[in-house]
Image (cartoon, rainbow, N blue to C red; front, top):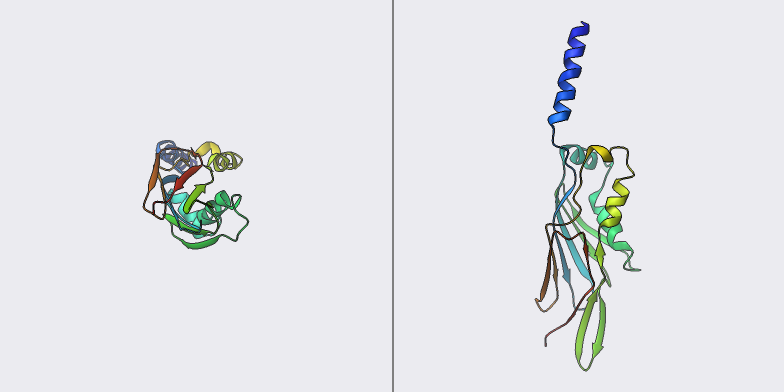
Length: 166
């Protein structure tokens, strides 16, 4: 009987050893700005089976984490529009600063950084077992006139300022 338990324990250890140690992977982040500075932010991501289970049992919530990441940039109430096991969509009022000068409208977005998310992850007991990638594969900031700024594999993005075309 002890041999059966030993064999099962060895099989479990082998399974954990060959199992890929993956976690949250940010695929894309799209920030779509309105003329008044509001933003709809859509993040596409992959979750491991373990993380999907945590979301299902409400032990983790990617939308809440995304909301926290953008919460410090505004005094307004952020709204979670939708969340699935592979995406989160939020509305951030007054996300971009809007200024008027000589009949032109200029929007300035705040800098975006996911470094805090990585730091928070490292505090969890399971952190050594996973490797999360918080830098979106593609980050796109879309202004109301169609102008786009694109970043690839960037953990932090600087402030983006654009004057809308008439």
